[in-house]
Amino acid sequence: MRSKASGVARMERKWGIIFALPPILGLLIFTLYPVTASFFYSLTDWSIGSDWTMIGFDNYKTVFTDDPLFNKALYATTYYALGSVPIGLAVAFAVAMLLNQKVKGLSIFRTIFYLPTIVPSIANTILWLWIFNPDFGLLNSGLKAVGLPTSQWVYAEETAIPSLIMMSTWGVGNTILIFLAGLQGVPGHLYEAVEVDGGNRWHKFWNITIPCMTPTIFFNLIMALIGTFQAFNQAYVMTEGGPNNSTLFYVYYLYRKAFTESKIGYASALAWVLFLIIMLLTFIVFKTSNRWVHYEEGGGK
Amino acid sequence: MTIAGKNFAPLRALLYVLLIVGSIGMIFPFVWLIRSSLMENSQIFVFPPEWIPDPFKWSNYKEALTSVPFGRYFLNTLTIELFVISGVLITSVMAAYSFARLNWPGRNLVFALLLGSMMLPYAVTLIPNFMLWRSLGGINTFMPLTVPAWFGGGAFNIFLLRQFFMGIPKELDEAAYMDGAAPYRVLWTIIVPLAKPAMIVVAIFSFIDVWNDFLGPIIYLNSNEKFTLALGLATFKGLYNAQWGYLMAASATIVAPILVLFFFAQRQFIEGITLTGIKG
Image 1 (cartoon, chains in turn blue, orange):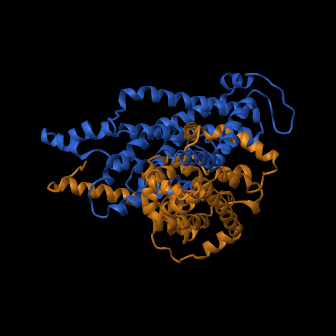
Image 2 (cartoon, chains in turn red, green; image 1 turned 45 degrees about the vertical axis):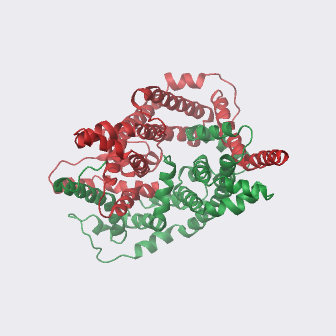
Image 3 (cartoon, rainbow over the protein chains, first blue to last red; image 1 turned 120 degrees about the horizontal axis):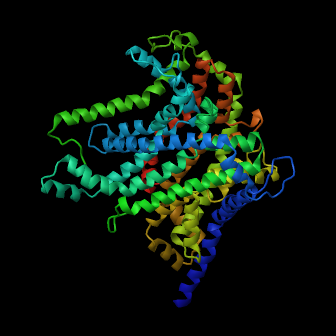
C-alpha cells in the first residue's frame, strides 16, 4: 500500500511538471525575459539599425527633465484614468444593482448591457467617431434638436479627454458582471437583520451592500487602473493623439517612439516609468485597502 | 438587495424605466450602424434623422467588401483563430489540471507567478517581444500572434479552468490511480469530458480576443495580404474616411459574427465570467 502511494506521488510529480511546462516556459520566454530585457534596453541609446552603447540612466533623466511630450502623455493618461475609473465603476455598480433586481426579462437586459463590451474596439471607435462628429453626429444632432449648445467633442483640446471618458462608460460590461456576481454573494440574512431592526432601503444599501461589496470594488478598481493607464486604441484610431497632443495616451506615445521613430532604448525607459507608476498606484490602493475593504470571516475573496 | 419591493409601485416603475432607457442607449448605436450601412451618404446626415433607408443601398456592402480584400483578411483571421484556440485549449487544460489536481514541488509558487503576470502592464513586454520575433524572422508572419498561445494559453484561462477542475471530486482520480491509470489518462478520460462547458467558455473568450485584437496585428503585420479583419478595417477607415455608408457596412460585417456568437453562447459567457469573477 505504501509503495503504491509513493508511486502515485512520483507519477503526480512527473506529469504535474510535464503538464505545467508550457506556462512555465511561457513565463520565462514571454514575461521574465522581456521584463529583464526591457530594463536592459532602457539603459542603452539603442535605435533600430544603429549601434548602441550603455548610457546608464540618461534616458530616464531625459524623460523627466527634457521631454515635454512625456508630460503631455502623462497628463492626458492621468486625466483619462482619474475620470474614467471612478465614473466607470460608479456606472457599472449602478447598472449591476439594477440588473440584480427581480424584474421580467432580466436575462434580456443583462445581455443588452453586456453587448457593447464584445464589439471589436476598432468598430467601436468608428461608431463613436460618428457619434462625436461635430456637424452631423448623434450627440450634436440631439443637442440641436432640444436647442442646447453643441460641442466639438474629440475634435477640440478641452473636450477630447472628457469625450473619451464618456465613451469608456459604454464598454464596462465585464465590470458590471463582476459586480453582479459580488452582489449575488451578499448573504441575505444580513438584509433581514436590518429589516428586523426597522432599517429602510438606504440603511440596507449603506450598511450591508457597500461594506460587503468592498472586496469586489477593490478588485475592479485595481483592474480598471491597470487597464486605463494602458489605453491605446482610441488614440491610435480616433485622434492620433490630437488635437494638440491632448489625447496623447502614454502607450500610444511609447508606441510611436518605439515603432515609428525606432528608439528602442528610450521607449523601453518610457515603458519602465509606466510600469513603476502603475506599481506605485497599485501599492497605494493596496495600502489603503485595509482601511476600507471589509473581509467577512470565511466569506471573503 | 431589492431596491423596490412588490408593494411599492412607483419605485418598480422607475426601475423598469431605467432599465429600458439604459437598454435603448446600449442598442441605439447598433441600430444606427445597420441603418447607416444601407443608406446613401446624403441620407445618413439628413436632419432630423431618418430611420428607413430609401433606397436600401445593399451595394454599400458590395463596394466596401470588395474595395479592399476583406475575404483575404477574413481567411487570415480564421487561420490565426484556429491556431490560437487549439493552442489555448490544449495547453491551458493540461496546465490547469496540473495546478488543480497534481502535487509537485514549486507548484504554488509557479501558479502565484502566473497570476502575478496578469498584473504586469503589457507595455513592458511589448518591445522585447517584438525584438525577439524580429530576430527569429517572425515579422509579417502569424507566428507572434499564434505561438504564444501554445505556452499555457494565458493566465486567465488557466485560472478559469483550474477553478472548474477543483470542483470535480478528487475520488475520481484516486479510483483511476488504483486501477493503474496514469494522470494523462485521468485527464483525457475523466476531466476533459466533465470540463467541456468550461472549455467552451475558454474557446469563446479566445475567439473574441483574437477577433478584436488590434495592437498585435499593427505591430507584427505590415503587408496588406497578411492583415486581419480588425487591422483591415482600420486601414479601410483611413482610405474611406468620408464614405460613412461604406465604413458602416464594413464595421457591421465585422461586428456581426461576434454578435451571432454571443447570442448563441451568452449563457456560457456570463457564467464563465462570473465563475472566476476576474475577467478585467
